[in-house]
Amino acid sequence: MPGGSAPAPALAPVAPAPASVASARARPSVARGAVLVTAGILLSRLAGLVRQRVVAHVLGTGDAADALAAALRVGNVTQNLLGEGTLSASFIPVYARLRKEDPARARAFALASLGLLAAAVVALSAIFVLAAPWLTRIVAAGFEGDKLRVTTSLVRIVFPMTALLVLGAWALGVLNAHRRFFLPYAAPVLWSAAQIVALLGAVVVLGRASSERLAHAAAWGALVGAGLQVAILLPAVRSELGSLRPTLDAKTEGIRESLRRLPSALLGRGVIQLSGLVDTMLVSFIGSGANATFAYAQTIYLLPMSLLGTGEAAASLPDQAERSADTDIEARNEALRDGLGASLRRVLALAVPASAVFAVLAPDVTNLLLRGGSFDGASTALVAPALVAYAPSLVANACSRILGATCFAIGEVKLPARFATARVVVSLVVALALLKPLGVVGVILGAGVAGWTELLLLGSLVRKRLGGLGLGKVPLAKILAASVVPVAAASTLGLILPKALRDSSVGAAIVLGVAGALYLACARVLGLGGLRSLLGR
Image (cartoon, rainbow, N blue to C red; front, side):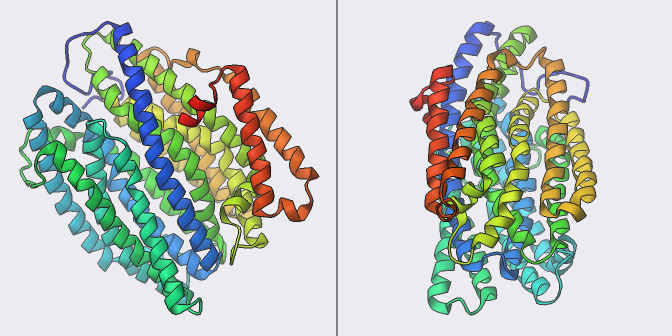
């Protein structure tokens, strides 16, 4: 595995191709893949928003909502650590190479990976269930009494769910390598749907007298949803591999290479996920409703973040991994720069205006997506400032995902892991400094400063390895103009509207609808894309 200074390719060499041909071939493939990933993520994130709206309507920002948010956060962190992010760095590049050389060897590698991964996650899940009381006291250190007890019981339900979701991440890796993007990214709709059904069913049966029992119903729904998510992916994987019979042969070709990549991938993902747990712990000391506020704001933030950064990075990784095998380093770097620049252009054309909306129109976004039932004006006043704090993070984190995928493709994983460690340190220092005066907002701002730090480090590394970032393809001035004008106009409209209308979901829809329409018009005039292309993205 190459170190921090060696630009050695991660994959086996293939016959050189002219850079212009490679670039032309890469762009449509990545763009189409990004559309499919984005479509799948859009469905799953919208389902997630509906789930959070139901949770907010039923539980509001009370203690039960805090407990459920903390428990699911523990499970999601574990899944992200062992699942998709780690597999992106260690599994997909190796599988893509073997599949190009010999599909039979690739299939053997995939099934051996499945067997070893399943054994590992089952064992770890059992250990974590037993250790739930101690883990909860660490992650939710600010919780006490019944609130701590409820969180512990929810964590015990969440860890078996995590084991299933990690296996789902393996299926996602296989399908992505076969350029099947939509299904694996849309499958989490089932996870959210199961929670919605479980929570609403519990309300019908139990009423709202016991918020603790309602939170447990949502957690059991999450476990069932994870099982449904894996169940819908496995037939598609079987059609590609021809078998789902796992093996436990660690000597299978590719396993050792994948395992060599694993420590750096785990370190890179691990420190980031550890940072997420630390954030949850810090927020738990703020008071009642803080963890729920943090979770609601993060759910809204992750909608554009996942659509833009995650979607583009996931679609480009397999293609970049194949391009990085070119023995002509100059041609390889040119093709990678072209693809990287096109990806950054697509992402920034939407991430910058989305950041502007978060920064200026956060109350409208919060009212539109969450207002109703137990989630009232006071809840909006808690969540909206947290969403404003997320605004600077969106551009940095979306671009970091794309640069990180490029690093994985060229086999550069050690330095990104170190950058991730630096990110966590910066996040913790800033969050601790701002926690007392700013509360949840201070924790989120710490993560934002850390995100920009990581982006600058990754940008410097990729520029050094490839000779540039392809930024000549990014019309930044036009993107800024198409962001500022619509948000300013929509904000002015909001000041004119009666306060009662502005604070309602209807008023929020009017303000945000005007912002969206003006953005599409500005983008068309400035040459950033027409209605069809932008909505397609």
